[in-house]
Length: 264
Image 1 (cartoon, rainbow, N blue to C red):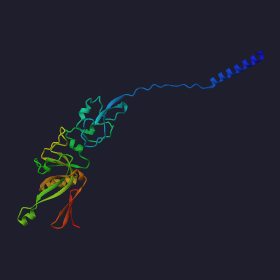
Image 2 (image 1 turned 30 degrees about the horizontal axis):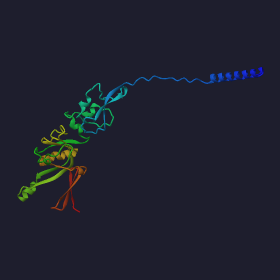
Image 3 (image 1 turned 180 degrees about the horizontal axis):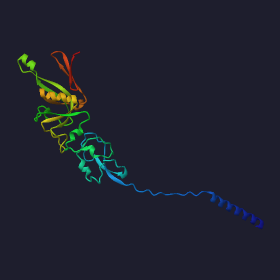
Image 4 (image 1 turned 90 degrees about the horizontal axis):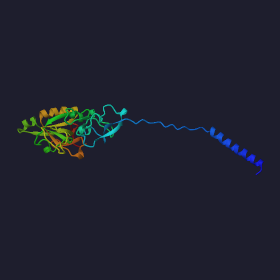
């Protein structure tokens, strides 16, 4: 190869190398910064496994421990450090305020079944708890088959003094004064005991409105009260119609208030 061609080739190679160096110097170098993330501190918090409605009795499996960021634990939550035996301790308690699934449970939302506040805990807002006397043999409580959370009609049996005087015989009447009333407790039992439903006691505690509570208080003074067990199928029905064939009228009892209307 001629010297001139060698010189030209050398110059070309040198120019190419210089161009490559210039390009490498002009390209910015990306620097990758790796930040070290500190581990999040967590604590075990007692949470609801599923939705817990008001009045529910907690069973094994309704609560569980769940890791929770220690900086974001809600105030009043039950932690494993504070209550290592929390699962066993709160089993059997009554839900006073509803909780959603996965929500941390607070102590003020639960009431122990043997607590003095358990009745007010399961009583809905605006309602009243009134106890009436019942026959321990079941004569006035459907043979003893009425249990807490059942629905009943309350009947009053009384002596009609005016009819008794005019007829010369003892006239007894019966009427439904309150339909579809929820039973809160029989005696002091509000739930099953050891898996067995127990019915005992001389009182039935009823969930009523303030006006119904007044009607009950008066009815106990003027007659004998009995409980008629309602079917689950019509537990939502709140009106009872009773026909009186003697005068062709119909007595309608609604929310404890009766009224007469002509038969159509």
